[in-house]
Image: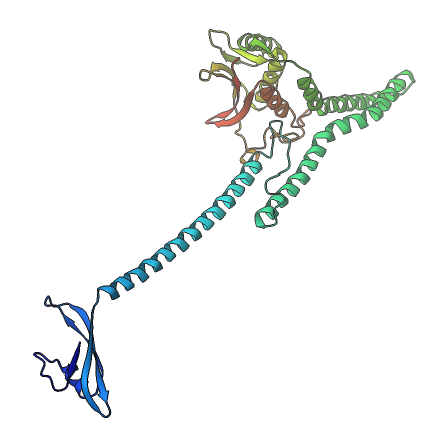
Length: 371
């Protein structure tokens, strides 16, 4: 509205009075409830150098609040949209990264197959980021370890093959010496040479045993047989072959049917009993326990009282060329292949061989799946 200078307003505010004096002003006034809700502006109307009137413009704050709220809503919407997009991108990147790391972890854990051989990694091997570099480093490391492991596995058979010819030459030479007239003192040295040759022959036979066992397992078809009958016959044979040793057997009353080969199961038990006999204290029994281990598996355990397994062999006891014996082992050679062969036979029977310390000795336990 417009007020003229010659008019007398009913209620003139100081801002309007200032406008009549030539000064523009802006103010807010309430609507009666104590809160400012109207914005007003007064502008003088000049005619020449005199103020003839004042233009007063009023507007409620609802439109201003509406504009402010709309601006805040747009800002919140843009912020929330940016946050959601950023969260989705970060979540997607983290999920992909964690998936690749889990895949790398799973392949690293399964790098050793059921036969103990080392395989290569393939997870993210073509990626150019840090995870790809890590996987390629792991793969290269496992490849070198696999080559070294293959070399160690084949070393026994190679040595056995390479030493057969010189051993045959030495044996034939000793046989020819027996045909020649020699002084009595020389017979002692010939006897020692023959004893050493016999021991060397036994060592070569042990060295090639693991290779022959792998070939035998590859060519053997599994069959269903009663493990209880096999263990019972073996225990009777142990008592006859070792009358000075006490064998205590605990067998179930019902047959224990497993899938595999009876002769190989007996050979596995022979390895475990021989190992227990080497470490058992004198005048202590060797226990052989066969029992059902749940509804789907059976447990064959051989226990002896004697020294405990050393901590440094934990996780390595069933590897090739690993032995807990000290010294030269006497007349019988021990190359650390007995338990390695026993584990191969246990895995052939869809089982696993484990070792644990007892309060007064050691127990080797084969868990086999029932047929």
